Amino acid sequence: MPGRDYRPVDYDRLYYRLDLEPGASEADIKHHYRHLAQILHPDKWRHPTAASMRWADDQFKRVKEARELLEAYWSVHHAPPVSRSALSVAQAEALHAQMQALLAQRERVRAELDGLRAERTRTLDELQRMRTERDSLHGELTGLRGEADAAQPRKPHAATESQTDDLHARSGGVRDFLFAKFDDPSRGWLLTLSASVFACVVIFVVAHWIAGLLLAPIARFELGRWLTHILQWALVAGGVVLTFGWGWSQRTLYRAARAGREHPVALPADETRLRVSAALRHEAHYGAEWSIESYEAAPDETQFTLRAVMRFSPGSQTGMRRHMVAFRCRAQTTGAAQTALVYDFSVAAPTWWLVPAARVVRDLRKRLDADLGAPR
Image (cartoon, rainbow, N blue to C red; front, side, top):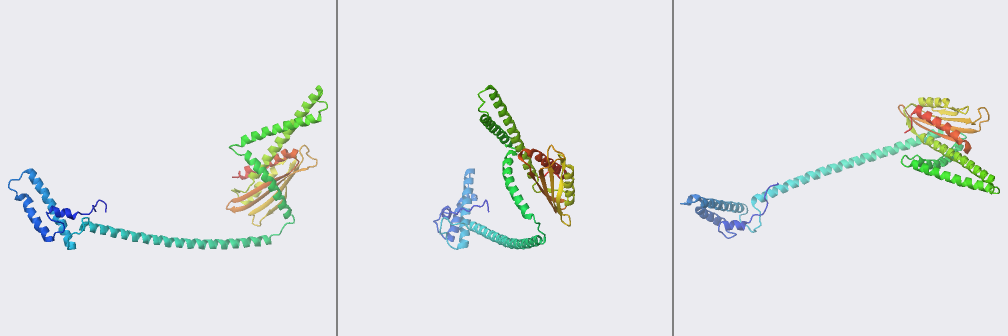
């Protein structure tokens, strides 16, 4: 208990207050107390002063306190105190009560700890049961998927498409790695500027070397020097156009591939199919339109796969169309009015015709983002 004094009682000093030697008997304590009380009691004084009265009263209280403490010890132990550092009876009882309270509190804490351990054991058992059920359900789901795959007819060109996808993924991986750095909001502009300056320097050096190599025999004449400069700057202009056109095309294809990664659409699968078809019908370039080559859908219209192709030839509205852009789309219902959509593009065109193909990809990607919602 806070505030209590548990310091040991100096019983020898109490004996000295009663003018006794330590270890005196209980009878001696009473006898000396009566003797000192007759001397120190204020009523026994004939002509007391105020100071003497205060002194006598204080001494009488000290003697009385010593007699009470010693008699209390004798009443319990029936023997004189054997140690000057022994505790009084009240102090010993208080310490004993405090010890009992601490022991009771320890038992309560132990009981609570046992309850928590039992609860932990029950929780672990429940968790183990849930894990077992999860593994069982996972095994059943794997078996059902295997049965569904076995029941689904295989296409003859499935292996060819898989190989094409792998090749496209490998080539797209390098492109994604490069252009992801250029699209970085924090330092993409710096990388783009550095790459542009580096490309211009390389183009200028190569053009200067080619022009000097081709026109070296006439470079010592004035006309030859003029022709060398004209050829050099023509090569620089052509190289800049081809290089920056190729870079813009690759960045456009990268952004289309990034936008086509699997993302949720807040539409059911059938509505998603209608909007994709509408986007394909409304996009036309160079006198050519998208044509749907293959379309597969589940009986309940919860998923579909679509492949469309545009064949074009810039500058020729009716001639032979030698370039191709392919669009593949796959969607599957994931919840109420929720569809997981993924699409990608592939381009079959020479390097100098990549810009028109990239325009086709960019316009269709923007149309899809506007009709279906920009991917997250």
